[in-house]
Structures are given as C-alpha cells and as structure tokens.
Image 1 (cartoon, rainbow, N blue to C red):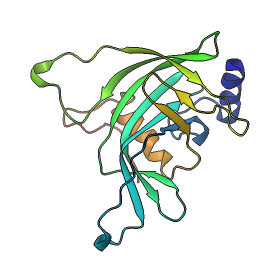
Image 2 (cartoon, rainbow, N blue to C red):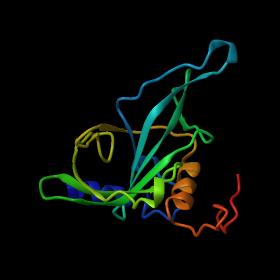
Image 3 (cartoon, rainbow, N blue to C red):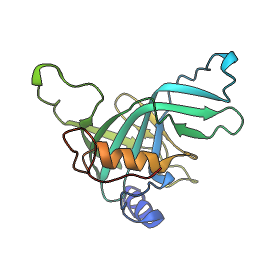
Length: 185
C-alpha cells in the first residue's frame, strides 16, 4: 500500500517545481474550530485560526503550514488568509514497511523571533499512519497528536507554494527580510 502511495503521488503530478502545489498532496487537520466574523461586517466566510496544512511532496519532502483558513459559507471552498500570518515546518517523509510513514520536521519560519538568540528547536521524528481511501491517493493521516484529512478544494495553492518557497528557506533573503526575487500577485 505504501508503495502505491509513493507511485500514485508521483504519477499524479510529478515532483514539485516549487511553482504550485497539487491539491492531492495537501491535508488539513480534522479538529478545525470554525468561527464567524461579526454579522455587521457582512462577510461570506467562516474562519479557523487553528488550521494546519500538511503537504506531502512526491519527492519525499513534507511541509506543515500553520495558518488561518477561510471557508466560503456557500461553496465550502477553503482559502488561506494571506494577511493573517503563518508558521512553517519543513522536513522529509519516507514509507515504512508497516505501511506508515516516517516524518522528520524542523521549524523554518515563525513570525516571532526566539528570545536572546536561543537556538532553533530540534528536529522532530514521528511516525504517521496512512488510512487508505478509494477515491484518494492517500486517505487520512494519523499523527501522534492530530488527524489530517485530504483537502479537496483550496483556492490559493500558489500562495501556499510561494510562502513555502520564500519563507521556508528556498530563497535567499536580504537583510531587510525581503527576498532577492520579485514576486507577482
């Protein structure tokens, strides 16, 4: 089954070139707490600020992206709140003989700096279980602390890919915090 997961992920879209993320690679935590903005604002969405997206790239890279998600009240389509801030963990994943995956993650971006020049947190090493689903390459992912479900619709995967590339360590930053590569919107 794990071999199938690896093969199917690679066949769906190939290895990521960093420009976009295939929706089949993306999972969201199951325990989202949806809230509504005040009614007088007239917003057509709900938001969950306890959101985590997991991206399992076919090449063995993994990203956990903590953010705020919006969900359209009519279509239920998800989108990342681009102005709400986020944090990124990056690492690798590999299949295990018992049909689980081994995941190593390290924090690579947080909006808050660590006090007094503290060293970065150590890499975490976890084993995740994969629950298969007929209609999806991989079903739910069970981590030691959370269950992640496949995302079927995410409006701004290009924003996600760009944030991972720029803030996740894929591009050189200038001393101002800006990148040396222009971005387009």
